[in-house]
Image 1 (tube, rainbow, N blue to C red):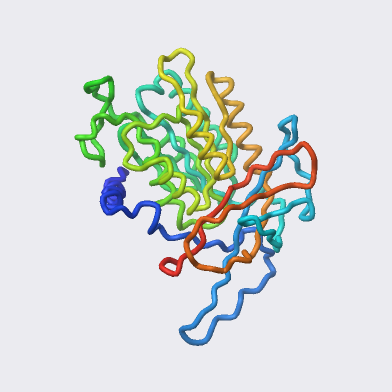
Image 2 (cartoon, rainbow, N blue to C red):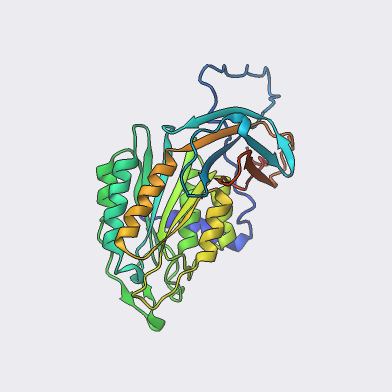
Length: 340
């Protein structure tokens, strides 16, 4: 399935100047909420009061990079824009369903590692996915392909990951071009990483509930995207999606990597960047992510700031224990009266 209609909507947003502004904020009902809590009574008549809950999924590692699993609610402190928040719900949840997006860079620069990437990604999804988990597969080079929509079927996902690429045709300047949703006059573009992230989050994950994440296999270079880094990051933050980057740094190739962009996307959403330059490290990277996805703490709070202004609010999560590092998203976009 090629994302032609989605790409056309991107162009409309770009030309209108609305990217990063009009995207609706997702629902923030906490997945860590106790199962016996009753739903609030429905308001009578048109007037309804909405109380939004902010979910934060946190991973804590010690100085030896091991995952810390024995923390309690009282060990955590959460602030929003510098104001301490009361954690209402806490859970160490290793089996909570997750919606994953596997984004694979299939540009010509990835040729030497692409087979190993596909094998490792297939094994990872087969090993990590539990009942009720769903994943999708997106490939990107000059354009973006949704080759498998969200599904629980790992055989469908494996087939999509190993789907042969359309033959690439070299164009001027060493770039390549395929038939796709983006205008052909954009022949200077080779790898539309930011477009792929934006589409995955804005069109696929934004309406999903619970834990959400992207695992991106790439060198983190972008050339030709309609979206900017900030647009891609904003889409992930609005979808409450964590970005993990497996940074492919091929020492046999002449191209470089862009760790700065990868680090920003990961840090701001609560994810990680894992540097990989051979097949052995690739396998270890997926093993580390598999462990991390099943070792997260769930923290949820009712924000003291109840304004529905659509403004980005900064979150800081700290732990009352020395020599540990907390991975958690750095903020979220508040709901807007113009949105939900």
